[in-house]
Structures are given as structure tokens and as C-alpha cells.
Length: 95
Image: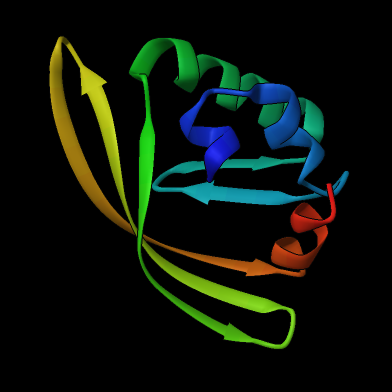
């Protein structure tokens, strides 16, 4: 989350596997190259910040309830989202 919230694209991408799938609404991306384009566009266009509301951890699987703050046309909007991650918590902590 820190890498996302500080818009540190290199660190954010380093926490993802080469074939990471990413699904948001109607957008679907897979792999570092596609995610780099997606995140680069979002970071510079929407100034995103995500806050973790709740976390459930079971072994190396993590499910999160998040709120994402975006700037759209000069106004901040907040979306509530859910995320599911496998093995990401332990791997990123080691980076």
C-alpha cells in the first residue's frame, strides 16, 4: 500500500509476479508490462490513495476491504473495493 499511495511505481511493480492478473470494473490486465501502463496512467491522472479498512489473512492468502480515493476533474471521489491476494504479503515484506 505504501508504494501505491506514494506513487512509487518501481516498488509497486517489484511486489507483483510476472503474470499477476488485475481486474477493476471492466478493466483487465495481466503481467508487469500491462500493469505498468495501467498504474502509470492512474498515478498521473487520478492521484490515487488507498486505505485498508479490514484484512483477513489465511496462510499466504489475504483478502482486504479497501477505500480508494481518486481525483476526477478536480474533485475527490471515494470507491469501496475488495481485493484478494495470494502470497503477496510475505513476498513484499521481504523486499
